Length: 209
Image (tube, rainbow, N blue to C red; front, side):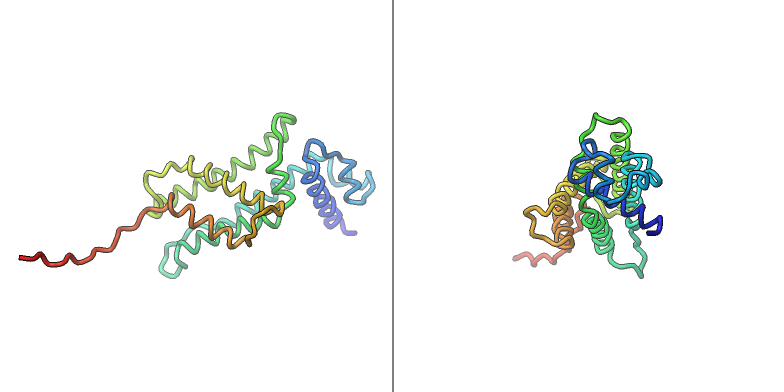
């Protein structure tokens, strides 16, 4: 097997083990058994489970950041609500595709491993900064409420989306496709985030004399 394929095999096995047992209870032996490789082969590619976890989180972070596109208000661009919907749909699709990794990130326990804790905080900080930056840009463009507290809104959105994605990832009781879930979430957030549009003026009836 080619080295890059063997490496991917070990990463996939580690993801399954982490999702099933949690990072702290998972061992290198568990990963080796799940991957079906020799211990010596494992150490050709990774020093230990911490290195594997860091790589999995880094790859997911890059995928999420790269899928978020800046809203374009140019005349040839699609309507901005559709651009927003596609951004959210791309994020949700990636998280749904990475079901096991999503479950692992959700079920982490902090306070047991300093390096693990730092990696988790780094992941959510990157995501928080990216989403809040998008909210501030939306305010500058006049799309979102100018008085919106962007950091609070960011925590609200990430927290609630995280919960919904987790239930989708573990095959819970949400009988929805990813696209249907995104449409429902956006209809919910539109009520609290978007700048209200002025109501069209209607002609007043003539006053009776």
